[in-house]
Image (tube, rainbow, N blue to C red; front, side, top):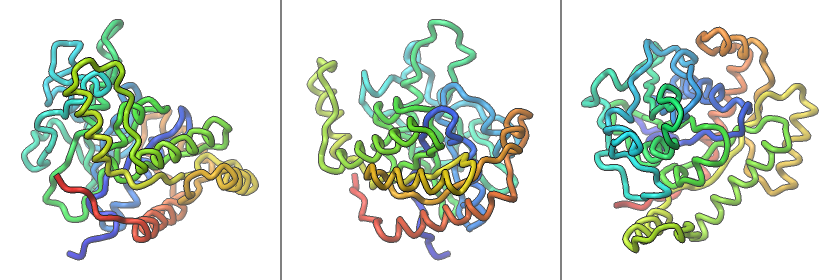
Length: 305
């Protein structure tokens, strides 16, 4: 089978709270599947629930946090990448060998993995940095042709500051029509530009020289190529034109496409139903094609080792 433009890529979905990144993740995964890709979705949000139902997965998989031994603050080996940048051991997973309880699938051949959740652990359970380490280091091996990895991160900027972006090929920022969302897209774009110019991490909190060097090594080995924006929850074409122009004036990331506000999707999330929208399928298809075209223009050889 001929390799498709997005095959083997690692894409991360980011956005401020309420921008609709999980909705975009679901619709994009479905669009990729329809175009002949084999999407693997990682739920890397430590608090939000419902992604499996939104995707139409058969069941909720057990979190990979359990597979890797548990949170450090609960006595497990998975630490926060800010305090301990050391790579997660055995983070290359063969889906053919990973026990089935840690993965789920949909009738559209979309695989779902879950990083880990904090909600059930109660007060004083600690931070969700270990979930970010799993998302940063996880590498998927699959017998499926044209696999594309999609990670749905928690709202805000925190996970990117923990370094999850280092292992991605592209960051996709979901932008709703708010000033905060526009500014976040610009900040993401600026951050990736700095990484590509050789920016190194803040390490004053690390007392072990080996950890300092490891953090710097990971920044130097960053594979991220760029940032692209997906506009979402737009009320009308006039707002879309304003958001596009504002991003252009702010020297923000390129826009892959736009999705209009859909109240039925909001009701689907409320009911815990599978998220779907025939009205949005054409727009999502256009976004997928735009991503393929963007990658065809910008794809570079990736570092090895």
